[in-house]
Amino acid sequence: MTYNQVYSSWRRLSKEAIDQHILEALSQNINYYDSLKMGVPASHLDKQEFAPDSQVLDGSTFLKTLINNPNHIGVHTDTGLSEPYFSGTQRLEKAQVI
Image: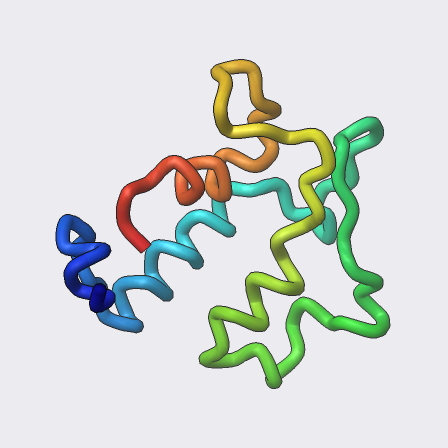
């Protein structure tokens, strides 16, 4: 089977549309660099090693995701009981696009 046969009901998005969806989702997640939260089940990269404002990140949604999307330990999207700190990522995981 070809890709188009297997995923015939999926809507194909442009790179720009995918970038827009991802960056919007990241903006809805907690930002550990601006707001430290004790007890939130997650972690992030060391900002001295992986600077969130590095020029290397300009134009690279993939790299921005690696830097800004923390490890969501124990945060699930299959229930209505998930932590609100990662609502952007949860929305993408539930979406039928991307």
